[in-house]
Image (cartoon, rainbow, N blue to C red; front, side, top):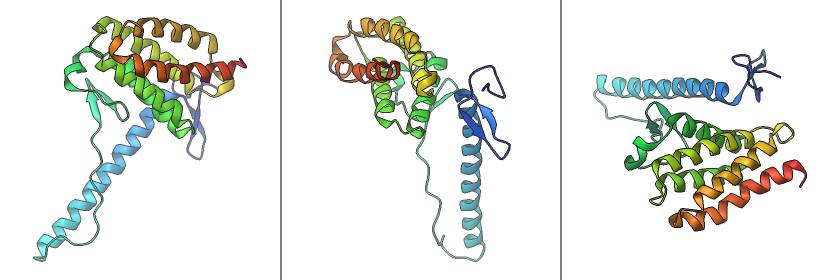
Length: 200
């Protein structure tokens, strides 16, 4: 089934009309909905405070709690991946945005271990002092495709493509001694995901 908004495979169905959306389009739709909810919560808090102020009373009753702040990197809002200010300028925002979206989809799809592995690898790669800017972007670009395939239903995954990119990415990260432990622990989780999907 094809996405209603683009030519990518649909992964979700939205609304009573069950409109098919791909990962990227669904994520954008979810972000809009989430922003509307947050705006409504802020408005309700404001109106509650305004009523209390009008009658001369302190704020009363439960309030919607403040939501945790997401990281925004050159327009890409990251909900899962945490990066420091020192690496913001080195990030390919399109690729890291795709990785972040895929992590959300994996969590929603019941694969938290795979989501955590991708999150941990992304953060380690971006913070590595042994990898150059180009090397970081190269691996993150590969990881964006790998993570998107991981978030795709098992039967629809392009396992050969993912395994090829995994091999390429692992060769680059092998040059970074400061993230060796993380890579040795987390890359095998991704390999296993695509090996099982391929029946190997």
